[in-house]
Every structure is written in structure tokens, then in C-alpha cells.
Length: 111
Length: 113
Image 1 (cartoon, each protein chain N blue to C red):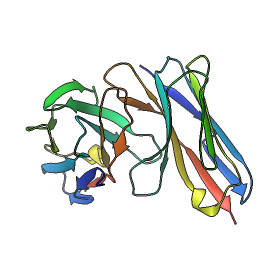
Image 2 (cartoon, rainbow over the protein chains, first blue to last red):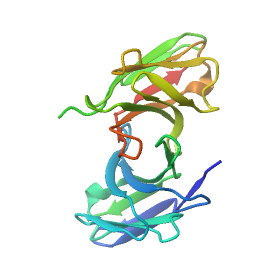
Image 3 (cartoon, chains in turn blue, yellow):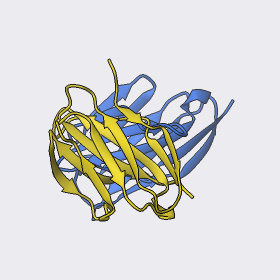
Image 4 (tube, rainbow over the protein chains, first blue to last red):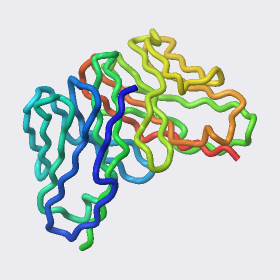
């Protein structure tokens, strides 16, 4: 079945630093989405990407849809303590619109 | 603007008992998805509905699991004869179309003792 490999698994950074994480797939996706999840809560949508090569920003967050349609990355600039959480990439298949999720990147930010 | 609502937020049950969770999607959304998430993992797809029709079920959804969306609005997920391995966060999401964004609820955390 389809699988997403997300890396790194965890990151420990200093406040103010930039962060980069990525996701690769063995299959092509039509859409890539990035979510953030806090403990005990559901994932919250950060960015959605619809076209290969697309680069989209949401405040300090920037994400790109890879040209091959098999990968995506998320950058966070000038991290702040409230960026702490688990970030998930998700690929949306052409089979019913369901999402396939990566394993997550846990981000810790030291003030 | 009300988001996706799930009830209850937490459920503790004894092994062998039946449990039912409810999900109320965003009102104009015709697609509703159920996911399961265990600690340290990403959400895993269970099933989805378009209006009242259940269009796909994952192999993760054993015979003990059943989901309904009788009027194309809210949905219920029932687990019969719960097992300790069923302990997880059960997430509901909705979207307005096949390639539209999925919005998630806060989830129901199930603990089976």
C-alpha cells in the first residue's frame, strides 16, 4: 500500500531558528497537506498544495509540492515556543480523497 | 463557524464492552472520514462516507467495527466486544468534496482496560 516517509522524526531547536522537514512517497499524490497536532487534540490544517512545483506560504510557514508529485517539504522560519507540536504530512489520493499520513515530526523549541 | 465535533472526548471501558462514538461534521460538508491514531503514529484511515453512502472501508476495520451516517449528517462509529488493542484516538474529519481539504475534530480517546 501507499506509504509516506517523513523526516526527521524529531527536532530540538532554539527559539528563532529555522526548521525544515520533508515527506517522500512511493506513489504519486494529487494533493499534499501539512497538519500540526497538539497533545490530545486533532490535527489542524496548516497548508494545502494542489499542483506539482507549487510553493505556498502561511505566515512563517512555507511548503512546496515536489515536481515529481512524490514529495513535499515544510519550512518554519524564526521558530517560537508555540510552534512546539507534531507536524504531519499527508498525501491525498485519487481514490475517494482519503489522506495517507506520514509518521510525524515532533518539534521541540527551547526558549 | 462550527468545526467538526466529536463526542465523547474520552471513553474508558472494560474489555468486552461495546462503545459508540459520534461525529458531527461541518454542516455543508458531504464527505466524512474516520481515522484511528495510536501513540507515536500518524492517523490511519478507517472508512469514509459520501452523504449517507459508505464508500470505502479499510482492512483495519474488523467485523467488530461498524460505522453509519444514516441521514448524511452526523456519523457514529461503534466498536463491539472491545479489546485492549482498540485503545487509540479515534478521529473524524469532513470535507466538501473529493479533492477538498479535510478538517479534523478533536478526537475521542478510547482506553480499554
